Structures are given as C-alpha cells and as structure tokens.
Image (cartoon, rainbow over all chains, first blue to last red; front, top):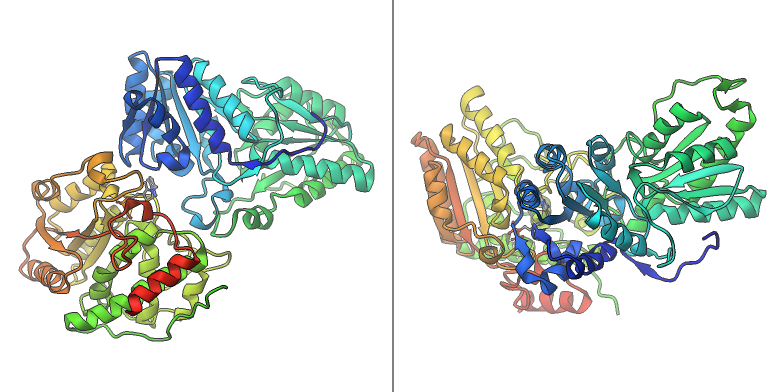
Length: 338
Length: 293
Ligand SMILES: Cc1ncc(C[n+]2csc(CCOP(=O)(O)OP(=O)(O)O)c2C)c(N)n1
C-alpha cells in the first residue's frame, strides 16, 4: 500500500452502518439495538432493512448493553451502538460484567469518537475509552482508519466469537484503503516501508502519519515505516517489535488520550520485547473543547507536522545512543507518560 | 448574500411581570437562539426554542434568585440544566440577565468560546452550575444540591432543574426521582420539557415513558401538568412550588410542561427533525421575519 492516494472522503461510521446490513444478510442471528441517535451511528440502515431484528431501547445505554448480553446468552449476535462517550462509559459496569465476564457475542459500535465530533465540545469528545476498554479481558478492540477498514472490521468482529468494540467517528475523513487492503483481527499492516523510524498509528490519524512520512522523505530523506494498527486488542506484537528492532525508534499516533491508549499498548509490547526511544502523539491529559473537526485536530497536535516533529525527536534520541536495552548517553528525564 | 447578525444589547430585570412582558422577552430569547445557532452552523434548535417561554419566566419573573454581576453569589438559588444540548436558550437568558455581554452569543460552539456546545465549568461562564451533556445526570446533581440546602445548610435556597422527556428514558433519572421523593426534597423543582420529541421520533414510539404523572406521583412528587407556552400557567406552577416549599410539604415538585419542539418558528414546530439542527441562511431569514411580524 505504500503509495499515498486517497479516493474521497467518508465518515468511518458509514463503514459500520453498511457492514451491519451485510452481516444481517449473511446471518439470521444478527440483531441490533438502538438507543436513539440511530441515524447518527447508522444502525438506521439495519433498522430499515431488518425491522424485525431491530429493537429501539431508548436513551438507556446501560439497559441496552445488558439487554444485548441477554440476547447473546440466548444465542444471538447482538450489536449495540451509541456515541463512544455513552457506549463505553455510561455502561462500563454492564460491559465489564454482563458482556466481558460472561464472554458473550455483544458487539459495540462506539460512534462520534475523538475530538472530530467537533462543536459539541468536551462532553461528547470521548478520548479515554481505549484506555478503559483495553483493560477488559475477552474484549476485541478495533480502531479503524477509514471507511473501508471500518466496514471490514465490523464484518470481522461480527463473526469472531466474543465481545468486541469498534471505535469510529462522525466527520468525513480520507478514504485510502481499498477492498484489497488486508484486514485481520490481531494484525497490523505496514502502509509505508521504512527503516529510520516507525510510526504506529490507529484510527483517522493514520492518514496524517502517512503525510508525515512523505514530508520526512521529501525534506530529510528519512524513511519512515508507517504501521496501521487497528487491532488494539489483541495487538500485533510481532509487527510492532520488528519495527522497533529494524527502525530503532517509534512514534505512536492516536486521536485519544496518551495515557493508556495505543501508545501505552505499544510501549507495553516494546518494554517487554525490545525497548527503543518512543514519542507519543495524542491528547496530553486534557479534555476537549468546541471547535471545527479539522481545527481541533490541528490545535491538539494531531496533524502531520506534530508527527513529523516527533519522528525527528525520536530519531535524535536514537542517534544519541539510546538503543534497545542499552542506555548509553541518554539521561532519563522521568517524564510523565504524555 | 450573507445576512448580518447582531444581538440586541438589551438586558431584562428579574421581577414580577405580565404575560405580555414575558412574551416580549421570550421573543428576544428565540431570536438569540436562531441567530447563535445560525452562526454556529450546528446545534439544537428545537428544544431550545420550545423552552424559551419557561426560561423567560424562570429568569425574569422573580422566581430564581441570582446576581448577574456575581455568578457564584452565595444567596442564589440553583439552576441545573440536565438536558445540556438545549444550552443555547440558557446562554441567551444568562446574557439577557447580564451575566455576560449579549455579543458573546455569536461565539457559540466555536474554538475558544465560553459558550461550549454543551456547558462546561472549565470555561468559567458565570451562571453555569454544572457541566451537562450526558443525559440523566443533571437531575441527580440537582438532588445533591437540594439535599445540601435542606439537610446540611438548612437554608431557604431553591433548586431548579430542566430535563428532556426522551432524557427520562435514562434509568438514572428515576434513581434521582426516587431519592428526591425519599428525602422529601420540597426545595426541588424539576421541570420536564415534554415535547414528545427526541432524535429518532416521538418519545412514545422510541421508548414510551408514559404515564409520566403517575410515575412521579408514585415517587412522592407533587405533580403539576401545564401548557409550557402559557405564561399564566407557568407562573401558577412556580408559585405552587414555592408554596409547597414554604409549607414544608415534604414533596419535591415536578412540572410536566407540555411544549412544542421548535415553538415560535412555524416550519420547526412539533417536528423532531429539528431536534439537533441549526437553521441555514434562508431558514434564518424566514424565522427572524416570522418573529418580527
Ligand atoms: C447519555 C446520553 N445518551 C445519548 C445522548 C445523545 N442525545 C443528545 S440529545 C438526545 C435526545 C434527547 O431527547 P429529549 O430529552 O426529548 O430532548 P429534546 O429532543 O426534546 O430536545 C440524545 C439521545 C446524550 N447526550 N447523552
């Protein structure tokens, strides 16, 4: 996939909505629960096509999550979707016990995630759910990078046994993966080959990572390996460790808090396997605020220039001799992980 | 042609008034809602317009004690917006009361604004008592405040809260109702914006919450059902709440206000499609014209 090409814009939520209909056609036991806002998270497509397998639960995320668990315990594959702010947090206890501990086929679509929900402001900009969800045993957690990947991820978790959560967004973002791009739960893909620095990203900012790699090549002749890691859990340990081994430094990028998110997951993998200097691009321990999606991505440093600068910093630390487990010249700064 | 938007620099006092005076204020509030949402290019028109009459009486009829030059004045009653998405109407009355300049209404939902898409305390907008936006939480915040004033401070402060009707599908609302009834919070006035509209359709169709009056009665509430656009009925309901507080009735009050989503703009009225949309340019022109006529 290393060529940088986009073929339009579409919100990732459409991939979720369209895949639900495909799943409904393939499997009679797929059912969907709505908690109002079905036209926003696009469970409305399924509702129109299969009204007999759709249940409106009202604005009651805790109840919907637990009803889904009841349906799953009765042999159904139960999807439920709301905004991530309410589909991961309002129902956190229900998710933990009735869904994950029971280890049942409940699949949650977390919509309108991240700062790109825009003017609605901090209350609706969920930036913490990856940290929480990653800690839940049995849960598969996917953060797709564009429309097509969201579609494939939804299809994949639909037939993969056990609980799953897919995180998607509201605003239109570049489409750059194709039907032919591989997707597999637990696998990351190298979107751009490189050996100087590895940029591991997930979600809609993978595109920004690709732009940063291009700038690094153009301005400095730096070859950056861009890894798309939609599968936060399980994580592709081999692809990530190989990247550290072969590139010697890593930058992680996510539209999410730095604390506990993708970057933390990658750090856990590397500390165990092959520690290298790392830089973290994400939300630095703060709530969001109102603004336009693109404006917020830029103000919160989630666009390519920050990734580019972080890559240069990671390379500089690597060049100072901080390689693998050997701390040569670098003096630890005991910085917070942010 | 872009229309020029200006917010009239006019404040209103908080005192007893006639229905005609409230009508004039509510009209200005509705203009504010339309203008600020047009400029924001996103946001919730329907509920904000539908509650303009009740907010006008509450803030300008001498029912809620506050000091616009000192937002955290200790003598104030509390107003907690639980349905955070209708904050444009709250922002309008706060600015018209003098908490901040009316010109600031033009910044709604924009980067750097104190008028966040849903209220937050981090931006220090005077008059805001709590963040809101996750439905079903403000009502419990109000219960917490009412408990404080009734049992800890033992003072005469009143606590008002506004929730939607779709919002009542959140189970936590009924936990709030149970605790308010259990503790006999007669200093609590809960106003339900009963427009029977939510995002997916009619509340009765998405997930029925009815009968509302019987539910609240069962939780030990003093239930008052009114036409939420009739100023006399709004005033009478608020007077009854005050009486119930003064007489130590031991019952919280709920005002079930029958309202029309989008009230005051004919093409928005009673149409749930207007729950979460702003007017475009032509619709803004039409709406403002209708209000001027
Ligand atoms: C916990 C939670 N779930 C979902 C939402 C998304 N949401 C915002 S407003 C709304 C509908 C509210 O309906 P209602 O209370 O009747 O308000 P109205 O449509 O009359 O303005 C929903 C589902 C939310 N803000 N919080």
